Image (tube, rainbow, N blue to C red; front, top):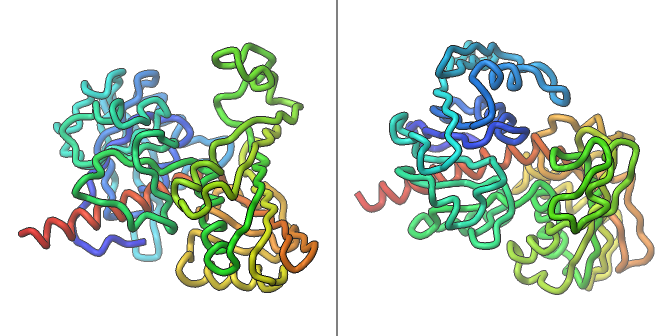
Length: 359
């Protein structure tokens, strides 16, 4: 998605973990996005450059990466249009949001990828910036899923927004398409979810001591867990409130997750019609967000896929004219990070339009 303006978008990233680093990768593919500052208390510029350049899941970064005592410099790989301009990104190590010098680098938009400052009050501690986008579900900030409800963003009141979760970004486009075309009566969702950084490599105590299974080793175990993705979808699509719930099954894979969605429709239909309808949306209004594959693929085939949700047409079931199961793949790291950048660009474009209309 290209921003329909000549203005650069000046961005800062707080938190340079899995999502923060992949947000940077996604942002670097858009020349109109300029990342000016990264803040991460626990890493030096040298270590941050190393972690960005070498990724066990997504492979070595195709461009060049260097560093000095106060910054990292990234040169994106050349495209068909020629070489790309290097970005020198100042690196800071502040623990408190209010101490991060965003203003010194002209940052307008902060992407908070820490998973800590996700509520309105805590995220608003970032000072002297135009907007904050949180890469986690929030109980207090409005949640926007690009391609589903991002047009509800209100530049007059939304200072902090949430990009919801990776699973919500996979589920919401599906549910919107299905409900708009067939009317969902009720649905159950299970996400077969890859390992994340919050899990234990060996048995230990779970965070807070409540989810005992969550403290067990992620290596060699299948772990039932909870997820807030279905509930989040009802906030994004309120007409589905009371019609969907779900759970998570954590599995010992490094990346790529799968939504297993079972649902009843009000309108009589067929599995073939459902797949054709989803494919239509994947080629039109949800192009680049929703996908449909007719190949016999497995999870690793979707690593670094930028789409939010890729329906597997060979993995669904039709019981009768109202009862179906569909499965949809998603890269819970890069697909999600790509939507963070899409949401950022939509917000920036909307802000520019508002500024122009009030000039």
